[in-house]
Image (tube, rainbow, N blue to C red; front, side, top):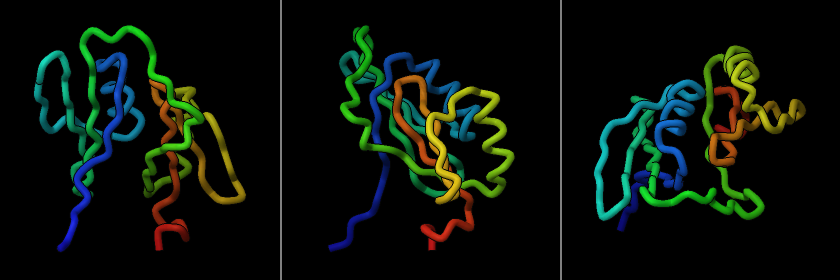
Length: 125
């Protein structure tokens, strides 16, 4: 038996705002969408890794999601770490930096943390 990783899923309060954020901050693009009983499922891709991010928007929800202690996060590597950091500083979404480990985190519109690390980072090997 062999399992294959398909996607990670997050719930978002404002779909348009989240789509704009992930496009600007990480270059993710919508690849498909489906509507099922008051929910919109949007799948985003970076166009090369095969991994997708599923965003679920509950149409009638008005309250922000409780993310607990925010122990969950997504992680992205980038080929130009300095340029990515500059972009995220301009977007004012950097929420935590750890220069010793050569990583930093950005926070999306719903408060989910996204780890950014250089593509040659030792944890990728």
